[in-house]
Length: 134
Image (tube, rainbow, N blue to C red; front, side, top):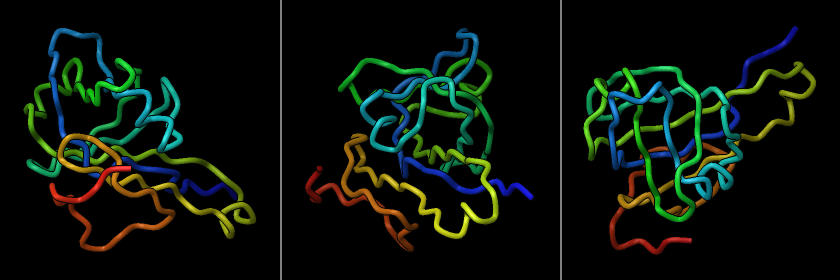
C-alpha cells in the first residue's frame, strides 16, 4: 500500500502579486522552494489563511532572492496581495518509508524570510516581525 504523506510546507507566505491573465500556477522565489525541498513544476496545495480557500496547482520559480509569491491564472481570483497562504507538498511512499519520514517545515516572517526550519508542525506558530531571519 502507498500512502500520501505531508512532505514539506512554506508556512505562512505573504502573497506579493496576483496575475489573473497568466496560464496558471504559483510563482515562488526559488530560494524558498529549495529550503522547503519543493521542486519546479511540483504539484502543491495552497491554503489561504485569510479566506479559507484551498487549491491545487504547480510551482514555477520567480526571481531568486526577491521573496516573490505570485498567484497566477484563475487562482488569482482566490487571493489578494497581502493574504497569508500555506504551500504544502506531498509525497507517495510505502508504509515502511512512512514510518521514518519527517516532513520539512519552513516557517516564515511577514516578508517571506525563513525564520525557522523544522521537521514537525509547530502548534501556534505565527511570525513575529521582531524575530530574526535565517
